[in-house]
Length: 412
Image 1 (cartoon, one colour):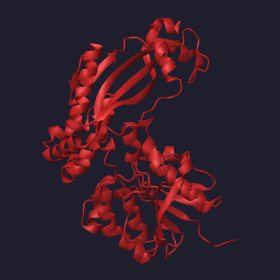
Image 2 (image 1 turned 30 degrees about the vertical axis):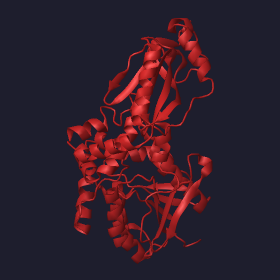
Image 3 (image 1 turned 60 degrees about the vertical axis):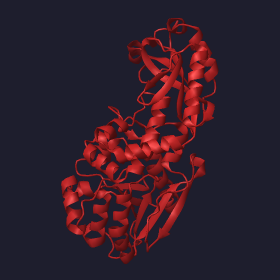
């Protein structure tokens, strides 16, 4: 029987939770069932390209020297491109780390900017985190360990048993999750106290600059303080949010409000000025945005057909309940901001349609959505250039169908 210890892969998100685990492992390996030289341990960082600079600086200043002194392997990885077929890129693999990479070849903004969207989440799953962190680390682990079992260390706090339970559903004969903070009964106050005592700093939360969760988790004040410290980064996120809202008024960064609203209420003139400079200097576009809304499933359908309905009958769709939506985006004009706004005014006059400006975003509606579904809406809107043209196959045919008939006619 081999005495070789099972490999241990530590997911280091650079924040307080996983950093506290690292310091405990480094200070007392044997006390945590590890070999004295930590030779079985690999620390992995999956980079989204959007981390706050203060988090990166603290990690470089306090943790990298400890890893280098103990010669613990640190691997930095990132997505290779937008598609999974682009694979991952290993940015660094060393036992003497001295810096953290700020981004890889494909960052989260590279994904969000051209699509005109903000981070998405569904069913309590952080889709961007899955794509830019979880998937990347899983690919590296599969290539590194193959069929060999390994322990995967994740920094869920003592009060995050629910997240650990969901993660444990992805356990396998090779991937064996380990949640040290839950084992130690360490919650956030204990973690922060430990790091304050160890390094003399209050370790900040680790999250992307455009993450919607800080506000949802009642960390608004700390988030706004960071926006004041890094106004240029805040301005970049404001642009991202503004473009998303231009294409879809419901796409604010937060469920119950916008970053723009919070920045204004906070009086962060530095971020607002940086945002306005960017808006004035960049190229603009007039976009044609069309959206088709389908009718949602009826209560009868859910009762009879359960969680999925593969062959809907006449009573499976409720014309008063919104279902999925399809979107088409097309650039119809480009220029500086004044030229694009003038183009919208000319189009509005040509169509005898109103020009509507709300929160600095100008639209010209040419098809209004009704109160029943299926339905459709369409408008021209001015926003910074960069969003790529996109529509799924069959969109135009569906648009023609929905705009030619009433919702009740289509359902019938």
